Picture (tube, rainbow, N blue to C red):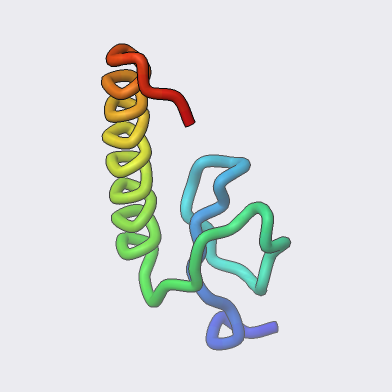
Amino acid sequence: MSDSDKQWYFNMVKGKAELGPISPIEQRMGPYKTKEDAEHAWDIVTDRNAKWEEQDRQWNGKGYRR
């Protein structure tokens, strides 16, 4: 398999961007054109998740339940 057959993706299990063939869907985010794109996408996801967790803490502190 040549590098042109591979794509960048962010391996969520290993916590890093990797160049490779399609990986198991439960382990990856992507594909992306560059390593930097994969890492930037992961930064966006972690920032979003942190905001959601904070919002959940605020809601739960006010007595709201899902």
